[in-house]
Image 1 (tube, rainbow, N blue to C red):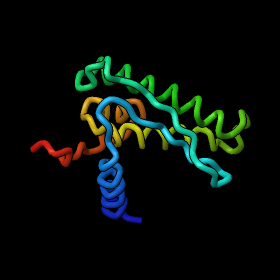
Image 2 (spheres, rainbow, N blue to C red):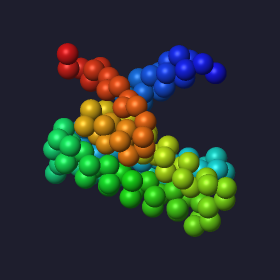
Image 3 (cartoon, helix red, strand yellow):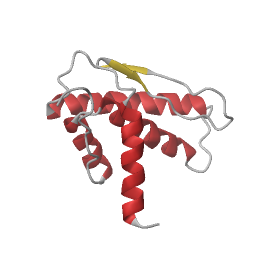
Image 4 (cartoon, one colour):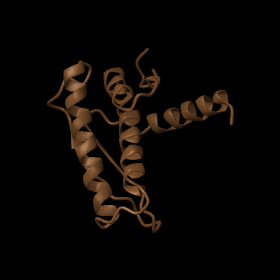
Length: 126
């Protein structure tokens, strides 16, 4: 798979996820292996200035804790083959994408050693 295809698919995923963005809270839905409805955890952040690096770091920590808790509940406390970490990483990426704030994307990129995902400007503000 070439890198252009990967980037294109990643941008498509981000654009699709953007439509569900919520201003003051969101759910972290880890996928369950048995195909049942995903668990959801609401992470509140209306008390934070998530545009600032400090606020974004605090929100990232909240997202990570919620993802760890939800994914642990999803697998019944038994991590087989590293599935829990995959669940946690996906839940974090989905949540950060949904919030769509540059400072939070920067925290994600720095913590995971990846290129910072683009923040899309289609929230109705130009």
